Image (tube, protein in one colour):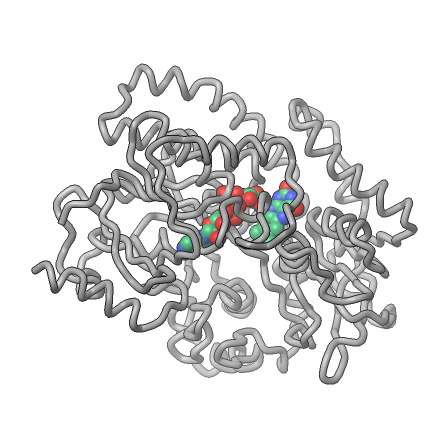
Length: 490
Ligand SMILES: Cc1cc2nc3c(=O)[nH]c(=O)nc-3n(C[C@H](O)[C@H](O)[C@H](O)COP(=O)(O)OP(=O)(O)OC[C@H]3O[C@@H](n4cnc5c(N)ncnc54)[C@H](O)[C@@H]3O)c2cc1C
Protein backbone atom coordinates (compact mmCIF):
# COMPACT_ATOMS: atom_id res chain seq x y z
CA UNK A 1 0.00 0.00 0.00
CA UNK A 2 1.36 3.44 -0.79
CA UNK A 3 0.75 6.44 1.39
CA UNK A 4 1.28 10.12 0.59
CA UNK A 5 3.08 10.64 3.90
CA UNK A 6 6.90 10.58 3.82
CA UNK A 7 7.38 10.99 7.56
CA UNK A 8 5.16 10.54 10.61
CA UNK A 9 6.19 12.53 13.67
CA UNK A 10 4.75 11.10 16.91
CA UNK A 11 4.42 13.90 19.48
CA UNK A 12 3.80 17.64 19.00
CA UNK A 13 5.95 18.96 21.85
CA UNK A 14 9.06 21.11 21.23
CA UNK A 15 10.96 18.17 19.65
CA UNK A 16 8.12 17.09 17.37
CA UNK A 17 7.14 20.62 16.34
CA UNK A 18 10.74 21.51 15.44
CA UNK A 19 11.21 18.24 13.53
CA UNK A 20 7.92 18.59 11.63
CA UNK A 21 8.42 22.25 10.70
CA UNK A 22 12.00 21.60 9.50
CA UNK A 23 10.96 18.52 7.50
CA UNK A 24 8.03 20.34 5.89
CA UNK A 25 10.17 23.36 4.96
CA UNK A 26 12.55 21.06 3.07
CA UNK A 27 9.80 19.41 1.05
CA UNK A 28 8.94 16.27 3.08
CA UNK A 29 5.24 15.41 3.42
CA UNK A 30 4.70 15.07 7.14
CA UNK A 31 1.89 13.78 9.35
CA UNK A 32 2.05 14.86 13.00
CA UNK A 33 0.26 12.58 15.47
CA UNK A 34 -0.47 13.66 19.05
CA UNK A 35 -2.88 12.34 21.65
CA UNK A 36 -3.59 15.89 22.82
CA UNK A 37 -6.19 18.05 21.08
CA UNK A 38 -3.72 20.83 20.39
CA UNK A 39 0.05 20.96 19.75
CA UNK A 40 2.57 22.16 22.33
CA UNK A 41 3.52 19.08 24.36
CA UNK A 42 4.07 19.42 28.09
CA UNK A 43 5.77 22.77 28.28
CA UNK A 44 3.80 24.68 25.62
CA UNK A 45 0.53 22.90 26.46
CA UNK A 46 -2.51 24.75 25.11
CA UNK A 47 -6.03 24.61 26.52
CA UNK A 48 -8.28 22.08 24.74
CA UNK A 49 -10.12 23.00 21.53
CA UNK A 50 -13.05 25.34 22.19
CA UNK A 51 -11.71 26.39 25.60
CA UNK A 52 -11.84 30.14 26.10
CA UNK A 53 -8.50 30.43 27.94
CA UNK A 54 -5.54 31.27 25.75
CA UNK A 55 -2.85 29.73 27.96
CA UNK A 56 0.48 31.36 28.89
CA UNK A 57 3.47 30.68 26.69
CA UNK A 58 7.02 31.92 26.57
CA UNK A 59 8.37 33.71 23.52
CA UNK A 60 10.15 30.50 22.46
CA UNK A 61 6.88 28.58 22.70
CA UNK A 62 4.93 31.13 20.69
CA UNK A 63 7.64 31.22 18.00
CA UNK A 64 7.80 27.44 17.67
CA UNK A 65 4.02 26.99 17.52
CA UNK A 66 3.82 29.74 14.87
CA UNK A 67 6.67 28.19 12.86
CA UNK A 68 4.95 24.79 12.82
CA UNK A 69 1.56 26.30 11.97
CA UNK A 70 3.10 28.10 8.96
CA UNK A 71 5.24 25.19 7.71
CA UNK A 72 4.18 23.66 4.37
CA UNK A 73 3.29 19.96 3.76
CA UNK A 74 2.12 19.31 7.34
CA UNK A 75 -0.93 17.21 8.10
CA UNK A 76 -2.12 17.21 11.73
CA UNK A 77 -3.75 14.24 13.46
CA UNK A 78 -4.70 15.56 16.93
CA UNK A 79 -6.49 13.48 19.58
CA UNK A 80 -4.73 10.47 18.08
CA UNK A 81 -2.80 7.76 19.95
CA UNK A 82 0.09 5.96 18.24
CA UNK A 83 -0.09 2.42 19.63
CA UNK A 84 2.25 0.21 17.63
CA UNK A 85 5.03 0.10 15.02
CA UNK A 86 5.13 -2.80 12.55
CA UNK A 87 7.50 -4.03 9.90
CA UNK A 88 10.53 -3.72 12.17
CA UNK A 89 10.33 -6.86 14.34
CA UNK A 90 9.79 -10.39 13.05
CA UNK A 91 6.55 -12.00 14.20
CA UNK A 92 4.65 -8.82 15.03
CA UNK A 93 3.02 -8.05 11.68
CA UNK A 94 -0.05 -10.23 12.29
CA UNK A 95 -1.37 -7.49 14.58
CA UNK A 96 -1.86 -5.08 11.72
CA UNK A 97 -2.06 -7.19 8.56
CA UNK A 98 0.70 -8.44 6.27
CA UNK A 99 4.14 -6.79 6.17
CA UNK A 100 4.21 -3.16 4.96
CA UNK A 101 5.49 -2.33 1.46
CA UNK A 102 9.30 -2.41 1.07
CA UNK A 103 10.95 0.73 2.45
CA UNK A 104 7.86 1.58 4.52
CA UNK A 105 7.07 1.32 8.21
CA UNK A 106 3.58 0.80 9.56
CA UNK A 107 2.19 2.77 12.50
CA UNK A 108 -1.08 1.80 14.18
CA UNK A 109 -3.06 4.85 15.35
CA UNK A 110 -6.34 5.32 17.20
CA UNK A 111 -8.11 8.46 15.98
CA UNK A 112 -11.45 9.95 17.10
CA UNK A 113 -12.94 8.15 14.04
CA UNK A 114 -11.51 4.74 14.98
CA UNK A 115 -8.41 2.78 14.05
CA UNK A 116 -6.17 2.96 11.00
CA UNK A 117 -2.56 2.59 9.98
CA UNK A 118 -0.10 4.99 8.37
CA UNK A 119 2.76 3.80 6.15
CA UNK A 120 5.53 6.42 6.12
CA UNK A 121 9.07 5.90 4.83
CA UNK A 122 10.37 7.29 8.13
CA UNK A 123 9.22 7.84 11.69
CA UNK A 124 10.40 10.49 14.12
CA UNK A 125 9.43 9.53 17.67
CA UNK A 126 9.20 12.50 20.05
CA UNK A 127 6.86 11.11 22.72
CA UNK A 128 8.40 13.09 25.61
CA UNK A 129 8.41 11.94 29.22
CA UNK A 130 6.08 11.51 32.17
CA UNK A 131 6.38 12.10 35.93
CA UNK A 132 8.36 9.44 37.83
CA UNK A 133 5.82 7.75 40.11
CA UNK A 134 7.19 7.25 43.65
CA UNK A 135 5.24 4.85 45.91
CA UNK A 136 4.99 5.27 49.71
CA UNK A 137 2.18 4.48 52.19
CA UNK A 138 -0.96 6.32 51.10
CA UNK A 139 0.26 7.38 47.64
CA UNK A 140 -2.88 5.99 45.96
CA UNK A 141 -5.25 8.27 47.94
CA UNK A 142 -7.34 10.79 45.95
CA UNK A 143 -5.53 14.10 46.37
CA UNK A 144 -2.02 12.67 45.84
CA UNK A 145 -0.93 13.89 42.40
CA UNK A 146 2.28 14.41 40.52
CA UNK A 147 3.69 17.92 40.18
CA UNK A 148 3.31 17.61 36.40
CA UNK A 149 -0.31 16.57 36.88
CA UNK A 150 -1.04 19.62 39.03
CA UNK A 151 0.63 21.78 36.39
CA UNK A 152 -1.55 20.21 33.70
CA UNK A 153 -4.69 21.22 35.63
CA UNK A 154 -3.35 24.77 35.73
CA UNK A 155 -2.08 25.00 32.16
CA UNK A 156 -4.85 23.16 30.36
CA UNK A 157 -7.92 24.38 32.21
CA UNK A 158 -6.82 27.06 34.70
CA UNK A 159 -8.02 24.80 37.53
CA UNK A 160 -6.70 24.36 41.06
CA UNK A 161 -7.27 20.72 42.08
CA UNK A 162 -7.49 21.66 45.79
CA UNK A 163 -6.96 24.43 48.35
CA UNK A 164 -3.96 23.55 50.56
CA UNK A 165 -0.95 22.17 48.71
CA UNK A 166 2.20 20.40 49.90
CA UNK A 167 4.86 19.75 47.26
CA UNK A 168 7.46 17.07 47.94
CA UNK A 169 10.20 15.29 46.05
CA UNK A 170 13.55 16.25 44.65
CA UNK A 171 13.17 17.92 41.23
CA UNK A 172 13.48 21.65 40.38
CA UNK A 173 10.00 21.44 38.77
CA UNK A 174 8.65 21.63 42.35
CA UNK A 175 9.75 25.27 42.58
CA UNK A 176 8.21 26.15 39.22
CA UNK A 177 4.89 24.48 40.03
CA UNK A 178 4.79 25.96 43.55
CA UNK A 179 5.31 29.45 42.10
CA UNK A 180 2.59 28.82 39.49
CA UNK A 181 0.21 27.66 42.24
CA UNK A 182 0.89 30.77 44.32
CA UNK A 183 0.32 32.96 41.25
CA UNK A 184 -3.00 31.15 40.70
CA UNK A 185 -4.10 31.96 44.27
CA UNK A 186 -3.46 28.60 45.94
CA UNK A 187 -2.24 28.20 49.51
CA UNK A 188 1.11 26.39 49.27
CA UNK A 189 1.80 25.12 52.80
CA UNK A 190 5.31 23.79 52.20
CA UNK A 191 7.78 22.69 49.51
CA UNK A 192 9.92 19.77 50.74
CA UNK A 193 13.11 18.74 48.93
CA UNK A 194 14.57 15.39 49.97
CA UNK A 195 18.11 16.57 49.17
CA UNK A 196 20.14 18.60 51.66
CA UNK A 197 20.75 22.13 50.39
CA UNK A 198 24.55 21.68 50.41
CA UNK A 199 24.29 18.86 47.83
CA UNK A 200 22.35 21.12 45.44
CA UNK A 201 24.56 24.22 45.56
CA UNK A 202 26.70 24.66 42.43
CA UNK A 203 30.44 24.08 42.63
CA UNK A 204 33.30 25.64 40.60
CA UNK A 205 33.00 22.92 37.94
CA UNK A 206 29.40 23.98 37.26
CA UNK A 207 30.42 27.48 36.11
CA UNK A 208 31.27 26.22 32.61
CA UNK A 209 27.88 24.54 32.36
CA UNK A 210 26.13 27.77 33.36
CA UNK A 211 27.63 29.72 30.42
CA UNK A 212 24.92 30.30 27.80
CA UNK A 213 22.21 28.91 30.06
CA UNK A 214 21.46 31.99 32.15
CA UNK A 215 17.76 31.97 31.23
CA UNK A 216 17.22 28.55 32.80
CA UNK A 217 19.01 29.59 36.02
CA UNK A 218 17.01 32.83 36.10
CA UNK A 219 13.75 30.84 35.85
CA UNK A 220 14.65 28.85 38.99
CA UNK A 221 15.79 31.97 40.85
CA UNK A 222 12.59 33.84 39.92
CA UNK A 223 10.45 30.96 41.22
CA UNK A 224 12.38 30.96 44.52
CA UNK A 225 11.97 34.75 44.88
CA UNK A 226 8.26 34.45 44.19
CA UNK A 227 7.92 31.78 46.91
CA UNK A 228 9.94 33.87 49.40
CA UNK A 229 7.68 36.88 48.80
CA UNK A 230 4.64 34.68 49.41
CA UNK A 231 6.33 33.31 52.60
CA UNK A 232 6.15 29.72 51.38
CA UNK A 233 8.58 27.57 53.41
CA UNK A 234 11.03 25.67 51.17
CA UNK A 235 12.70 22.96 53.29
CA UNK A 236 15.60 20.72 52.32
CA UNK A 237 16.56 17.31 53.73
CA UNK A 238 12.83 16.63 54.19
CA UNK A 239 11.02 13.64 52.75
CA UNK A 240 7.43 12.43 52.38
CA UNK A 241 6.72 9.35 54.55
CA UNK A 242 2.95 8.84 54.34
CA UNK A 243 -0.33 10.32 53.12
CA UNK A 244 -3.49 10.09 55.27
CA UNK A 245 -7.20 10.62 54.84
CA UNK A 246 -10.49 8.79 54.38
CA UNK A 247 -11.78 8.79 51.71
CA UNK A 248 -9.49 11.61 50.50
CA UNK A 249 -6.17 13.11 51.47
CA UNK A 250 -6.30 15.33 54.55
CA UNK A 251 -2.67 15.35 55.61
CA UNK A 252 0.86 14.10 55.00
CA UNK A 253 3.70 12.96 57.23
CA UNK A 254 7.09 14.50 56.50
CA UNK A 255 10.39 13.67 58.19
CA UNK A 256 14.03 14.69 58.11
CA UNK A 257 16.60 12.58 56.27
CA UNK A 258 20.19 11.76 57.24
CA UNK A 259 23.27 12.40 55.13
CA UNK A 260 22.55 9.24 53.11
CA UNK A 261 19.03 10.47 52.32
CA UNK A 262 17.34 7.92 54.62
CA UNK A 263 14.47 8.99 56.94
CA UNK A 264 15.50 9.81 60.53
CA UNK A 265 13.12 8.06 62.99
CA UNK A 266 11.47 10.40 65.50
CA UNK A 267 11.52 13.46 63.24
CA UNK A 268 8.06 12.85 61.71
CA UNK A 269 5.52 15.69 61.64
CA UNK A 270 2.05 15.88 60.14
CA UNK A 271 1.01 18.69 57.82
CA UNK A 272 -2.64 19.26 56.87
CA UNK A 273 -3.34 19.58 53.14
CA UNK A 274 -5.79 18.38 50.52
CA UNK A 275 -3.30 18.03 47.64
CA UNK A 276 0.16 16.51 47.72
CA UNK A 277 2.13 17.15 44.52
CA UNK A 278 5.07 14.78 44.04
CA UNK A 279 8.02 15.77 41.86
CA UNK A 280 10.92 13.35 41.72
CA UNK A 281 11.77 13.76 38.03
CA UNK A 282 10.66 12.26 34.73
CA UNK A 283 10.72 8.93 32.91
CA UNK A 284 11.38 9.05 29.14
CA UNK A 285 8.41 7.64 27.14
CA UNK A 286 10.41 4.97 25.33
CA UNK A 287 7.64 2.38 24.97
CA UNK A 288 6.88 2.92 21.27
CA UNK A 289 10.59 2.94 20.39
CA UNK A 290 11.24 -0.20 22.47
CA UNK A 291 8.21 -1.92 20.95
CA UNK A 292 9.63 -1.12 17.50
CA UNK A 293 12.89 -2.82 18.54
CA UNK A 294 15.09 0.29 18.97
CA UNK A 295 18.15 -0.28 21.19
CA UNK A 296 18.06 1.46 24.57
CA UNK A 297 20.68 2.37 27.18
CA UNK A 298 20.49 2.84 30.96
CA UNK A 299 21.16 6.47 32.00
CA UNK A 300 19.84 7.01 35.55
CA UNK A 301 20.58 10.76 35.67
CA UNK A 302 18.58 11.27 32.46
CA UNK A 303 15.49 9.36 33.64
CA UNK A 304 16.39 5.67 33.28
CA UNK A 305 16.07 3.85 29.95
CA UNK A 306 16.72 6.15 26.98
CA UNK A 307 16.73 5.42 23.25
CA UNK A 308 20.18 5.01 21.67
CA UNK A 309 20.87 7.16 18.61
CA UNK A 310 23.65 8.44 16.36
CA UNK A 311 24.70 12.06 15.64
CA UNK A 312 21.64 12.51 13.38
CA UNK A 313 19.27 11.09 16.06
CA UNK A 314 18.82 7.85 14.04
CA UNK A 315 18.07 4.77 16.16
CA UNK A 316 19.26 1.22 15.66
CA UNK A 317 16.10 0.54 13.57
CA UNK A 318 16.40 1.86 9.99
CA UNK A 319 13.89 4.62 9.28
CA UNK A 320 13.23 5.50 12.94
CA UNK A 321 14.71 8.60 14.58
CA UNK A 322 14.14 10.06 18.02
CA UNK A 323 14.37 13.50 19.64
CA UNK A 324 13.50 15.18 22.91
CA UNK A 325 12.97 13.59 26.28
CA UNK A 326 13.09 9.98 25.12
CA UNK A 327 16.80 10.48 24.38
CA UNK A 328 17.23 11.61 28.01
CA UNK A 329 15.29 14.13 30.07
CA UNK A 330 16.97 17.49 29.45
CA UNK A 331 14.42 20.26 28.88
CA UNK A 332 12.53 21.99 26.10
CA UNK A 333 15.44 23.80 24.42
CA UNK A 334 17.39 20.58 24.00
CA UNK A 335 14.27 18.83 22.73
CA UNK A 336 13.78 21.51 20.08
CA UNK A 337 17.34 21.38 18.72
CA UNK A 338 17.31 17.58 18.73
CA UNK A 339 14.08 17.75 16.70
CA UNK A 340 15.85 19.84 14.06
CA UNK A 341 18.80 17.43 13.96
CA UNK A 342 16.43 14.46 13.58
CA UNK A 343 14.80 16.29 10.66
CA UNK A 344 18.14 16.92 8.92
CA UNK A 345 19.07 13.24 9.37
CA UNK A 346 15.69 12.05 8.04
CA UNK A 347 15.85 14.44 5.06
CA UNK A 348 19.18 12.85 4.09
CA UNK A 349 17.65 9.36 4.34
CA UNK A 350 14.77 10.49 2.11
CA UNK A 351 17.19 12.01 -0.43
CA UNK A 352 15.79 15.51 0.13
CA UNK A 353 19.02 16.99 1.54
CA UNK A 354 22.62 16.24 0.58
CA UNK A 355 25.23 15.48 3.23
CA UNK A 356 27.21 18.75 2.82
CA UNK A 357 24.13 20.96 3.12
CA UNK A 358 22.86 18.92 6.08
CA UNK A 359 26.21 19.28 7.85
CA UNK A 360 26.18 23.06 7.27
CA UNK A 361 22.61 23.43 8.55
CA UNK A 362 23.35 21.24 11.56
CA UNK A 363 26.47 23.14 12.65
CA UNK A 364 24.78 25.96 14.63
CA UNK A 365 22.23 23.49 16.00
CA UNK A 366 25.01 21.25 17.29
CA UNK A 367 26.64 24.21 19.08
CA UNK A 368 23.39 24.94 20.94
CA UNK A 369 22.96 21.24 21.70
CA UNK A 370 26.46 20.97 23.23
CA UNK A 371 25.67 23.93 25.51
CA UNK A 372 22.32 22.46 26.59
CA UNK A 373 23.81 19.01 27.20
CA UNK A 374 26.53 20.49 29.44
CA UNK A 375 23.88 22.26 31.51
CA UNK A 376 21.57 19.25 31.66
CA UNK A 377 24.42 16.96 32.74
CA UNK A 378 25.42 19.35 35.57
CA UNK A 379 21.85 19.85 36.80
CA UNK A 380 20.45 16.36 36.33
CA UNK A 381 23.24 14.54 38.13
CA UNK A 382 22.50 16.70 41.17
CA UNK A 383 18.75 16.08 41.22
CA UNK A 384 18.73 12.37 40.22
CA UNK A 385 16.84 10.39 42.90
CA UNK A 386 18.79 7.85 44.94
CA UNK A 387 17.34 4.30 44.54
CA UNK A 388 18.08 3.30 48.17
CA UNK A 389 16.32 6.42 49.49
CA UNK A 390 13.25 5.73 47.31
CA UNK A 391 13.14 2.06 48.40
CA UNK A 392 13.23 3.20 52.04
CA UNK A 393 9.84 4.91 51.54
CA UNK A 394 8.10 1.63 50.63
CA UNK A 395 6.59 -0.72 53.25
CA UNK A 396 5.44 -4.28 52.47
CA UNK A 397 1.80 -3.07 52.30
CA UNK A 398 2.55 -0.34 49.76
CA UNK A 399 0.91 -0.98 46.40
CA UNK A 400 3.46 -0.68 43.59
CA UNK A 401 1.38 -1.82 40.59
CA UNK A 402 -1.91 0.08 40.88
CA UNK A 403 -3.52 -1.63 37.85
CA UNK A 404 -3.04 -5.19 39.20
CA UNK A 405 -2.85 -4.23 42.90
CA UNK A 406 0.55 -5.83 43.49
CA UNK A 407 2.29 -4.72 46.71
CA UNK A 408 5.97 -4.34 47.51
CA UNK A 409 5.53 -7.34 49.86
CA UNK A 410 4.24 -9.45 46.93
CA UNK A 411 7.36 -8.60 44.93
CA UNK A 412 9.73 -9.19 47.86
CA UNK A 413 8.08 -12.57 48.64
CA UNK A 414 8.24 -13.63 44.97
CA UNK A 415 11.96 -12.85 44.91
CA UNK A 416 12.52 -14.77 48.20
CA UNK A 417 10.50 -17.80 47.06
CA UNK A 418 12.12 -17.88 43.62
CA UNK A 419 15.77 -16.88 44.07
CA UNK A 420 16.49 -17.54 40.38
CA UNK A 421 14.21 -14.59 39.40
CA UNK A 422 16.28 -11.61 38.38
CA UNK A 423 14.65 -9.76 35.50
CA UNK A 424 11.76 -7.32 35.26
CA UNK A 425 9.96 -9.65 32.83
CA UNK A 426 10.28 -12.72 35.10
CA UNK A 427 8.83 -10.79 38.05
CA UNK A 428 6.04 -9.47 35.82
CA UNK A 429 5.10 -13.00 34.72
CA UNK A 430 5.02 -14.30 38.29
CA UNK A 431 3.29 -11.39 40.04
CA UNK A 432 1.31 -9.66 37.21
CA UNK A 433 2.99 -6.33 38.11
CA UNK A 434 3.09 -4.32 34.88
CA UNK A 435 0.39 -6.34 33.10
CA UNK A 436 -2.44 -3.83 33.57
CA UNK A 437 -3.81 -0.97 31.53
CA UNK A 438 -0.75 1.24 31.93
CA UNK A 439 1.57 -1.61 30.82
CA UNK A 440 4.01 -0.85 33.62
CA UNK A 441 4.48 2.86 32.88
CA UNK A 442 3.59 3.55 36.51
CA UNK A 443 5.19 0.64 38.42
CA UNK A 444 8.23 -0.38 36.36
CA UNK A 445 10.78 1.95 38.01
CA UNK A 446 9.70 0.94 41.54
CA UNK A 447 9.53 -2.80 40.73
CA UNK A 448 13.01 -2.71 39.15
CA UNK A 449 14.43 -0.78 42.12
CA UNK A 450 13.16 -3.49 44.50
CA UNK A 451 14.59 -6.28 42.31
CA UNK A 452 17.97 -4.49 42.29
CA UNK A 453 17.93 -4.07 46.06
CA UNK A 454 17.00 -7.66 46.77
CA UNK A 455 19.13 -9.44 44.12
CA UNK A 456 22.10 -7.08 43.84
CA UNK A 457 21.70 -7.16 40.06
CA UNK A 458 22.37 -4.09 37.89
CA UNK A 459 19.58 -2.24 36.02
CA UNK A 460 21.03 -3.55 32.74
CA UNK A 461 20.75 -7.15 34.01
CA UNK A 462 17.21 -6.56 35.26
CA UNK A 463 16.07 -4.85 32.04
CA UNK A 464 12.65 -3.32 31.38
CA UNK A 465 9.21 -4.88 30.86
CA UNK A 466 8.90 -5.90 27.19
CA UNK A 467 6.88 -3.23 25.38
CA UNK A 468 4.04 -4.82 23.43
CA UNK A 469 1.42 -3.28 21.13
CA UNK A 470 -0.84 -1.57 21.99
CA UNK A 471 1.62 0.49 24.05
CA UNK A 472 -1.27 2.64 25.30
CA UNK A 473 -4.88 1.63 25.96
CA UNK A 474 -7.02 1.82 22.80
CA UNK A 475 -10.41 0.21 22.02
CA UNK A 476 -10.27 -3.32 20.56
CA UNK A 477 -12.41 -2.02 17.68
CA UNK A 478 -9.52 0.25 16.75
CA UNK A 479 -7.06 -2.67 16.56
CA UNK A 480 -9.57 -4.65 14.48
CA UNK A 481 -10.10 -1.71 12.11
CA UNK A 482 -6.33 -1.37 11.58
CA UNK A 483 -6.02 -5.07 10.69
CA UNK A 484 -9.14 -4.93 8.46
CA UNK A 485 -7.67 -2.01 6.51
CA UNK A 486 -5.02 -4.39 5.13
CA UNK A 487 -7.27 -7.48 4.81
CA UNK A 488 -9.59 -5.42 2.59
CA UNK A 489 -6.67 -4.40 0.42
CA UNK A 490 -5.22 -7.93 0.26
C1 LIG B 1 4.45 16.72 33.32
C2 LIG B 1 5.61 17.58 32.87
C3 LIG B 1 5.68 18.92 33.23
C4 LIG B 1 6.76 19.73 32.83
N1 LIG B 1 6.82 21.05 33.19
C5 LIG B 1 7.90 21.80 32.82
C6 LIG B 1 8.05 23.17 33.22
O1 LIG B 1 7.21 23.72 33.91
N2 LIG B 1 9.15 23.86 32.83
C7 LIG B 1 10.11 23.29 32.06
O2 LIG B 1 11.10 23.93 31.71
N3 LIG B 1 10.00 21.99 31.65
C8 LIG B 1 8.93 21.24 32.03
N4 LIG B 1 8.84 19.93 31.66
C9 LIG B 1 9.87 19.41 30.79
C10 LIG B 1 9.53 19.87 29.37
O3 LIG B 1 8.15 19.83 29.20
C11 LIG B 1 10.16 18.99 28.41
O4 LIG B 1 11.55 19.17 28.55
C12 LIG B 1 9.78 19.27 26.97
O5 LIG B 1 8.40 19.50 26.83
C13 LIG B 1 10.19 18.08 26.17
O6 LIG B 1 9.74 18.18 24.88
P1 LIG B 1 9.39 16.87 24.04
O7 LIG B 1 8.99 17.37 22.71
O8 LIG B 1 10.50 15.90 24.14
O9 LIG B 1 8.17 16.18 24.81
P2 LIG B 1 6.74 16.70 25.24
O10 LIG B 1 6.65 18.15 25.33
O11 LIG B 1 6.37 15.90 26.43
O12 LIG B 1 5.80 16.24 24.03
C14 LIG B 1 5.52 14.90 23.77
C15 LIG B 1 4.19 14.81 23.07
O13 LIG B 1 4.01 13.47 22.62
C16 LIG B 1 2.66 13.11 22.78
N5 LIG B 1 2.61 11.64 22.85
C17 LIG B 1 3.30 10.82 23.70
N6 LIG B 1 3.05 9.53 23.42
C18 LIG B 1 2.17 9.53 22.39
C19 LIG B 1 1.53 8.49 21.67
N7 LIG B 1 1.77 7.20 21.92
N8 LIG B 1 0.66 8.84 20.70
C20 LIG B 1 0.43 10.15 20.41
N9 LIG B 1 1.01 11.17 21.06
C21 LIG B 1 1.89 10.86 22.02
C22 LIG B 1 2.23 13.81 24.06
O14 LIG B 1 0.83 14.03 24.05
C23 LIG B 1 3.02 15.13 23.99
O15 LIG B 1 2.25 16.16 23.42
C24 LIG B 1 7.77 19.14 32.04
C25 LIG B 1 7.69 17.79 31.65
C26 LIG B 1 6.61 17.01 32.05
C27 LIG B 1 6.56 15.55 31.63
